Structure formats: C-alpha cells, structure tokens
Image 1 (spheres, one colour):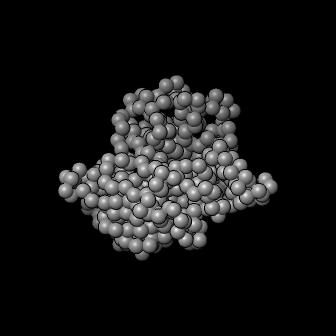
Image 2 (cartoon, helix red, strand yellow; image 1 turned 180 degrees about the vertical axis):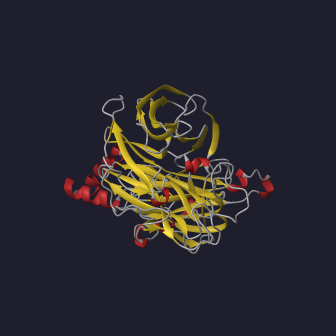
Image 3 (cartoon, one colour; image 1 turned 90 degrees about the vertical axis):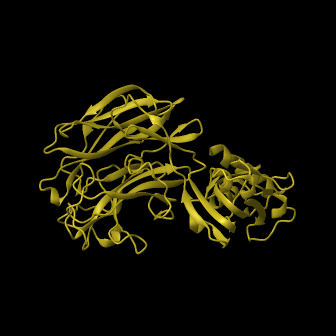
Length: 468
C-alpha cells in the first residue's frame, strides 16, 4: 500500500508540477481506495446505468480440518513467514478461562502453542470473551454471569504481553453490564477499541424465547481508547435498563418481522471493513431448540460492509452465500490469515478460505451497464477479477453466452478518445482475471489528472474487484 501511494505521489508531482504539500492533498483526498483495490461491495459507490444488477457474495471454500489447536482464535498478527494467533479457552463448567497463543503457516497445523494467562476464578462463571492485539499489548474483554443475570452480565478487562508477562485485571468494579454476545476489534488507524455489542430493544415479540416476549436482540457499537471507558457508555439487561433507541442498529422493513441480530464479528479487509452477522428468528414453543441453546434455531448469516467500521451497509442481506457453512463461519470469524494469496479462517475445527479479490461481486444474467466511481490508476494494466457464469456452470458450447466490454471515461463521465468499449472486450472463457487494455494500450498517456471511470458492459457474469 505504501509503495502504491508513493508511486502515485511521484506520478502526480511530475504530471502536475505541484509542490509536495499540494500533491499530498490532491492524492490523499482523491484516493479513497489507497491500496489500489476497488471491490464491488458498496452499491452506493456504483452507478447502475442499465440492467437488473444483483450484489452477491462468494461462498467460503472448505479447506480441511485442524487437528492440534484447542482454543478459539480471536486475533492474528503476521510474524515473518508465519501468522501468530491469540485466543481463548474455557473449561467445561466455565470456572476457568485462559488466553493462549500459537503459530501457523496454513491454518491447518499450529505450532508452539502456549498459555499466556489463566484468569482468576469468577464470582459466578465466565461466559464469553474476545481477545485483540492492540498497540503491542494483548487485551481481553470478558464477561461473567451477572447476579441477577437479567440485569446484564458483568464485563472485565485483562491485558498483558505476548511473552506472558505483565498480565493483570485492569478494572476494579465491572466496566458495564450487558449481553454476552459481542465482537471486539482494535482500530489501528484511530487507536481505539470498537465493541460490536449485542444489546436489547424493548419490542413485542410474536414468539417468546429465553428473552421473553417483549425484548429482542439488536446491535450496539461503542468505542474506547483503553478498554475501560466506553462511548456511549451505560449498562443494559434483558429486564432493563435499556439503551437509548438512537444507539441501536435494528432490523428494518426489508427483514423478516421476527429477525434479531444475534452476534456480529467484524474484521478489517484492505481499505474497508466486513463483518459476519449471525441472524436469528425465534419460533413457537414446543418445537426443537437450537442444540444446547435455550432458544430457536439461527436463521442465516449475512455479510455487512463498512468504510470506517462504524456505519454499516447491508447490500447482501438476501444473497450472502453461507450455505453448507451454517453459522460457524460468522460465529467464530476472526481477522483473516493470508495463506498463498488467499484468506483463511478457522471456524471451530474447520478451515475455510476466500480470495481477497473475490469475496463480493455484482452479477447480471442479461445485459447490464455499470459505471465505477472516479479511480486514480498508476501504471497498468488494470486487472479485473470476474468470471463467466455459463463457464462456471459447465454449460455446453452452444449454450455458452456472455461478454464483457470496458469503456474508459473521464472523471466528469465523458468518453476518452481511443478507449471505447469495442477495443477492450472479452468473450466466454475459463479466465478469471482480465487485464484491461484498449488495442494493447493500458491507459492514456498522460492519464487524466482528475482520474478516470470505467463503464462496464456485461452479460452472464460475476464481477468481483479491480486492481489498479
């Protein structure tokens, strides 16, 4: 990313003749996607000019089973050619909880596992926690069962070093009371913790569950510089008190009437955030419950996306493709571990993978036209990740269809001479990466200072991302 931005700065200085300070303003203000990746995950950043365009997600690919790790992975950190993981382990009665670390190169095999810290015995029992690597420290946020539980579970903060030294409880009294489902993240850019905390909303329910018939699970986001003082603050529980409505992220009119947000696991991907939401719907009493849990089954899992980790969009509520993966992938999701160009995750003992350039896509079976926002490519050629559906589905040659044509346009949306769609076209093949050239030329010389747009004309395709 740094080298990409540096090349962009030098390129812009040469092209414009502006001094460094002004060049930095030009480049950084225009460079929303600073690492040169544009992913088709945000409908609001695209203009659909024609066609019934759908937004979808790729299904995580099952890789295999890990056999020698007995703690839940919560956070990861590159360490040479390996990745260090940190996580939590509980005993069966939740009277003890331990922070662990290990190393891996492929997420299938782990080495040098060791315990960093064993928590003191709780007043009641440890329920749920999350571990993050933050500014050189390992930080654990964990709750034990409250007394009474309906007033909320009690949250505590522990921290220490990766070498096992300096571990201690950082709070005297409970930090706050709340729900035991949450996902903790460290926002490196803003040097703060973000807690994606399941909360409660007072609302009549058609079907009662273990929360009763007038409280549903929703999402609440709070931040902290130290893990102790949170904004917004405040405790909450099933029986109250309840957080203000304007602090809650709730289902809307597009969702099933009984939908609840059960648990959210966020992660930073390139220049944006993505999170897996486990959705839940209660059902009438007298029917089977969800395994060992005292309520009805989960409904599905759903990808959410965000540019800043705070304001979230749900473009994949009807198309998130987790079939066969069930809720494990979202429920246990941790920041991805890079392995030979792909991302891998450990969900319980199962290992799943996605390619970072092929997680989210736009698609249309018939003719479609889509225009990108303004981009600032350096060098070339630009590389589009895409695939023809008729090829993916194995259709015979007489049923293969589809095309891709790409037109280069100015920032103010005018065609650029010499770069029409007819000069950059592709017909069905098994290719999944398409270098964009117009009769062999990757970009205008000079490239317009204000940037360029791509207008994509396609049919029967999935288009995932653009590297530029």
